[in-house]
Image (cartoon, rainbow, N blue to C red; front, side):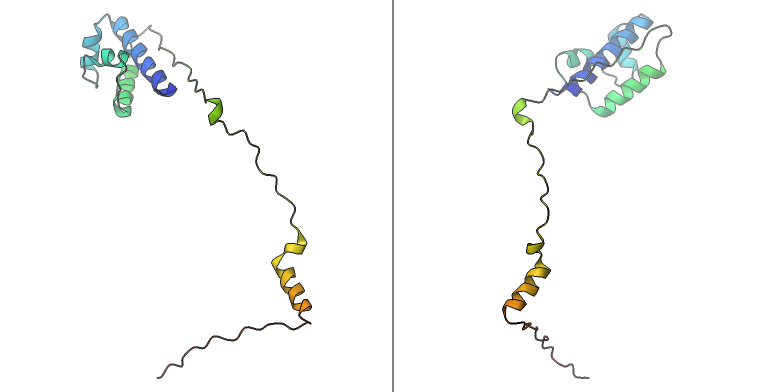
Length: 133
């Protein structure tokens, strides 16, 4: 399970518990009155279940607007993402090599023309049929 998903789930669980404790209500009552309207949400999240982002946002918005006075808002856990060493791309970027002027296409064309005794090859114009009007 991704680290960010775990962090948001554990934060929502902490918010639900603190909210219920602050108002001295059962968790089921708190959840039924919230926009989630699911008394079993906490059990489902603790068992590894999911919640949609929309439901998470609605729940957090509701709890923050109706937060009990004198109760501290739970902190969001730190999100730590560990990348396996074999997934790291530690190769340095390629170093740009200086351009070799002898390989410049313009120079090569002139050099090949000189090698042929100075003759230049001219392209023949394309034949286009004349339009009758």
